[in-house]
Length: 342
Image (cartoon, rainbow, N blue to C red; front, top):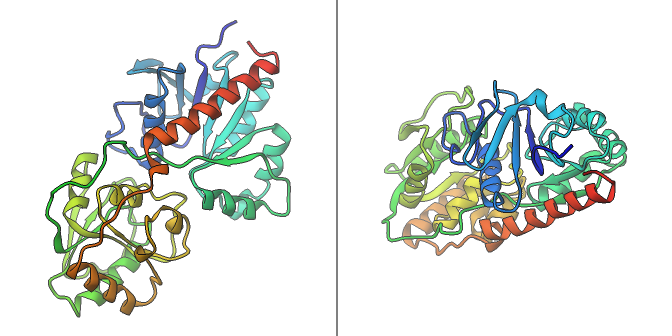
């Protein structure tokens, strides 16, 4: 029996069902938007089926079919599978599809209670694809000294046509554009400290709205933008002096908002050595010790006087990322054929 699709993308963790063309729907985060963009970019190469927990009945949206999560375990659901974040679902999928290529597409840092995932994935023959080199290195260290599955990384994509334009920047305007659990309480503290020296500073906060989080008292000068669609968020980036993100506790596996800010010419003020910050930031001037208010103040003053010229790394462009995924998916399907799977 012919599989219903070449590639099945299994997402048991998403809050709402999504598909290409719907990536600005309420509840869609960076992971879901990335999945949707890659599927759209490769839809002329492969047929895709999305299996999602919130999906209640099968339908077709744009280039793909969507199905309830349970249908991923049906015979011939797909020729190969990418499972988003859940290693347990990936291992369970292996029991139902012993001959199919399966890879875990990991966008998060697993917690300590998941240390046995290395042995389970290795035994099941499931590869892992991380979203940055630093993410892959961190994951390798997390599993050490135990069994290690075959490991690769592919960056999250930024649109090919995203570039700086002539939008004037407000030297007093800082932007935080992430979920509040990503260090917003610390960012508030650093912003309040800067504002004692630069009282005209304003911090705009764009919150995707998928998680409520206690960030403590809100300092003077903070403006909440709520949830913004993607074009509106990019417009905020273009107007801002910088992406103000000097928190020291939340390690990004990639940091798409950092890459997109750099793509439109906006620098990001980041804590050096945390997560993928050093890998994604386009230059060392964006990296400081986030604990040291004096360094933050110095950098903001410098950028207010002379805005830096910032360009994103071409490695993150959709065309480059798509080429990597085309190779990976082609290999997965070839491996399935070698294993005698139709």
